[in-house]
Image (cartoon, rainbow, N blue to C red; front, side, top):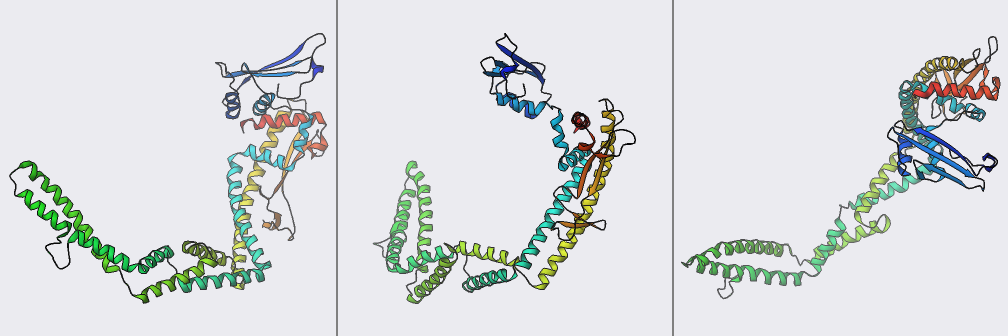
Length: 428
């Protein structure tokens, strides 16, 4: 029913099929509800769903969920959300120190979650500084060479001092300077057509003059229709006047000075020299310079820089140790409550004389450990989940010494310990 392998041997002799059926209460479990919905299964009015597994004597297996035929993997996914099977193989979980630590953390809830998050944030920052200090110290010669190359590139860029988008602007300016005569002729003719001749020749009044004459004719008319056209001619006159002004300004910017063209071409050559070496355009060159400055800030291998990094490392180590101490204290307190709760549950599982103890010890290391930090005067290993090693101990009966649970209990007793743990952790 939980998606395991179906065996023909389970079919009773003389029968064609074996069936197993179960009704599951989803109970608002999001993962289980999503699996049922995705399978297109029908949920009963009470919020439960029926799963069915059948195996035929010919070896064929069928799975159904909520009245729909589904792949057997769907039952496996659903059971993972809703079923906890306790057997002797569960002892393998208890053998893992990380699993034992996770049991305490789940039981403690926010009492451990919050200091653990603070510890991890401090550890990440501390490790980053330790890594940077190590890299600067061991690669000082290589980093100095890289810094020289970056410094040379920045000096070359700063000497030219390019502006954003300057290469595009220069290209347009060069086009205008190279074709200044053609541009002047075109803009002059357009200006004359709009504003009239510069000497005021009445035979060449321009568009503005002609519109002015048309306006005078219309305003002198007594016909209402013709007079209504006058304001529209006024609008056209305003627009043409603006165009004429802009054409005049454009004419003033046209410069046929060969020296200016030569100067602009020289500036363009300076920018091209940078774009050939550092990026495809000037904006890319400026981005390279910003990145180079950022990289150089991390390549200072002077004694002052290394000393400053070492001071930051030591200060962060103190902060990390404080969070580690708080985290350990929370786990010690939770361990005592959890051990008492598990022991109480075991009395109902035919282990009335057994007693659980949970130890929380810091993993002591020497200075050769790259993740060593001093907590309460001792060097300990600062792992991603704290500095604590957690061990589950079982006192099988009164007078017996507490031993690691996998050494003090039989396979059956181990599965009962796991069941007691799961019951205690049900709220988490």
